[in-house]
Image (cartoon, rainbow over all chains, first blue to last red; front, side):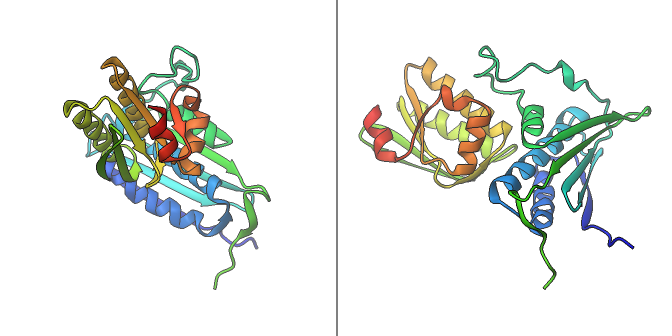
Length: 152
Length: 111
């Protein structure tokens, strides 16, 4: 029988300060792995961006609407799901922030961060409203020296 | 996010400490840069040695600060970036348009 993988699930009200709660949870989870600092930082940033997008664009900043975050540490990958209760959007509509005309724009990099810092991103939309963003990051021998740390 | 300021060689040097992220750090950075401009400073250096991370909002505020200072005829430069902050500037390719220096002295001498 396969042992259950470490995971957490947290629900927050749509306030930017609550991103810090998610950050604490994701950092504690990633600390169970022997990830190098750069990989861990990139995953943490991608999750922050996904939650910020869910708050701002998904839930329109309505503090009564929730954002749910689930993180699962698999043997060879980290999987993070971020769900909001909003109207959804098409990520393909977003301009490329690396185009010369966009380089000095002050916004529009959140989705870009997610796509740069994670290996795979899927969007799904509930018919009744709500976007589910699923992000995966493969853990390679270079990013994880020995997989999950042994419990002390 | 705490930001202190010093004046050195005619340059206002800002020292943010903590995270430049959505909600707090990004706003603090904006206020510090606007405060320096309002005080008459047109040469502004942000020493990022105390900054552990920066998100897309923090990047947006940094770009906004850069363009605002330029529009007022000044210069805004960055120095002493951690590897994490440097990673973000490289991914966004802002490293190609912002003035970034390894050391504070090197940055001061460039104004």
